[in-house]
Image (cartoon, each protein chain N blue to C red):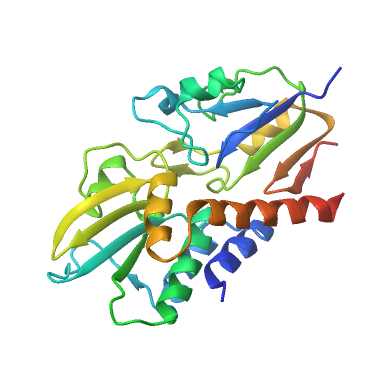
Length: 159
Length: 111
């Protein structure tokens, strides 16, 4: 299953402004991931990952496919994985509504990890991708390679 | 003369081309999203940078053989980082016959 990366692919072929962002909630709803919005409850027990992604980032979309596939594989000790679209953050301070941290956001994904209701880790970009992917038996390098291979295939297709 | 190529951003920097980035690369804590190198490490490794925003690229008209973009926000819009890549600027800096390659595919060829 690669519903999230397919969204990125379709957006790349037909870049109608805002299209992928409008489609994103429906794709999340069909996956084991959950869309989270400011004001929604934060679970008080167990592990919770909140992953902020950009639909224009193939790296972010591939990460969500990796997470969804792993969660579908089951296992009782899987953490709750919630997601949000960084397009909802129009100003820098909007990110704090999702992941309360004092660092500026330079890259996606933006990730927060909660344990028993307490934020215990946050990060962005490569570091965050690695932290999340590692918990699901993957890694940032695998995700980068997947997207790079896709770009190379497109380049080869036009050669 | 080798072709003049500009990378207007996205994930990672490209060796051997001019990499345009916003001023945030000079902010303490910034690292490349792909290699997690600092700006200094990238410069020391030979990467060349042009630091400016997207609205008014400090490059002459029709100077560029190829523009590269990958995994970037929608063109001609605004995100919390500021204005995104401007198609008018890409068209201005490309030479006639120059190409804009987005995510590995030809997005535009200047007539």
